[in-house]
Amino acid sequence: MAFRIPRPKGLTGQIVLALVLGLALGVILNVIVSQPLFTESTQQVDANAGYYVLKDNTPVYDSLEATKPVLTLQQSDSVKLVSGSAQQDRLQIESPDPKLSAEQDYFVQKNSVRQKGFIFHWLQNGILHLIGSIFIASLKLLVVPLVFVSLVCGTASLDDITKLGRIGGKTLALYLFTTSVAITLAMLAAVLIQPGGGLSIATDASFQAKQAPPLVETLINIFPTNPLKSMVEGEMLQIIVFSGLFGVALTLIGDHGQRLLSIFNDLNEAIMKMVMMIMIVAPYGVFCLIAKVFLEQGIDAIIPLGKYFLVVLLVLIVHANLTYLSILRFIGRLNPITFIKKFKSVPMFAFSTASSGATIPITLENVEHKLGVKNSIASFTIPLGATINMDGTAIMQGVATIFISQVYGVDIGIQGMLMVILTATLASVGTAAVPGVGLITLAMVLNQVGLPVEGIGLIIGVDRLLDMARTAVNVTGDAVVSCVVAKSEGALDEDVFDNMESSS
Ligand code: ASP
Image 1 (cartoon, protein in one colour):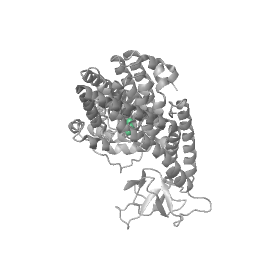
Image 2: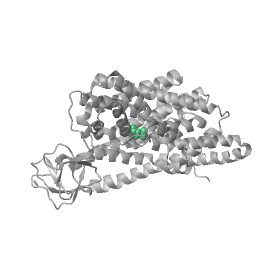
Image 3: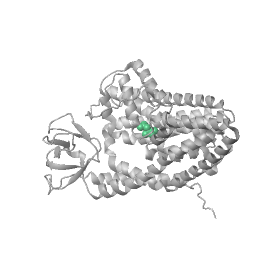
Image 4: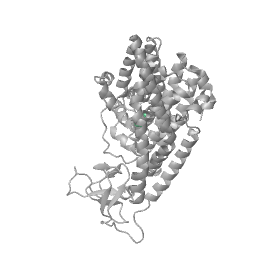
């Protein structure tokens, strides 16, 4: 008898539970590891006590009074305490980095040093890390084969190849349109609410911006010189180009193409089944990822940047509810409530992985099987969207640019704002859909309008949490555009879209 793996029932409920429990556990553990280092009986650093854990992005100074840090350390660089007491603000640590002089003394703020021990070794870097990483890896392992196989099937099943250009044009236009709306909303909100007004915060000056590639390079890079290399390196746009061409070729070689296509269709079924298998264990993965993030970050990092954090969150919510649902209703003539009910588990995956790329298998499965978008459209729009359509990221960049300009007291003017809309919209094209990429492209936007790139150091502390929220919006935008394009091409099965049986 064949072993059947059904689509997991009640998945959304399980993921919500995993999110809530993970968050609660993470916050509780964070409070425990953030307990004061010194008790009544231990008022001095015990230099023999072994290694301690730091908060992520901990600034390191070369004297007790220095205001500018010489580097930042991460949690993974656990350090040894050399001296310090309950009365001091800074504690001396052992020379933490091989690049730095062993002669020099280094200091960190007392509140960046956290208790070491069981929670760090067995939970944070132990079981939570283990299960969370295996979960992400098992999603990622499907991305390249899935996009390749699915896109070959998709393009090969188009009855008319000329449709390809039209579908591509519509998809790109809608992606660019939603992104520019997103960033405009973000800047409007930031100008009105003034999250950076009257604020002066210490900058983590050691933030080093990576240079984003110029636009021409980005365009050339879309075309692979070696498709195997593109696959090995997960270059999504290159894989899309190669798979699309391969699929088109299959339609042009008659019977040979049909024979190969049937193999690709079978492969597609097998990979989709693997997605289903991963979804069954997803709640455990989500629980571990979320617990780890909140254990590492805590929520106290949000407090000094509360206003910035809330403005980004507010615009993300407005964009997801107002822009997307209006597009569905007025351009797609589709019921937005049905969309929400059927799509809701995907943003939760994106939230816990903070990667639109890793979420591609889940988004694609959902858009095809629950929302009824034909494979010929979804196999193209979803991987493309995951790579180039980042509305949530653009929102963070819009708010961050205005926030940084307010903190530094620089008025970028209307012209600067138009420039931000243009650069941030273009910047999202060609950047990888992985955690934290938004900060790299933000450097490009700040450069364009002459704002200091070090400003990124102001917001880096809350970026991991915002990354999760904006990735949820990023993937929602991809699905909305996919549905609208499919509807306009007569490639949306409305019986599937309207069928509420599959909404769990
Ligand atoms: N993590 C985001 C994504 O994968 C990108 C970013 O904003 O950093 O969509």
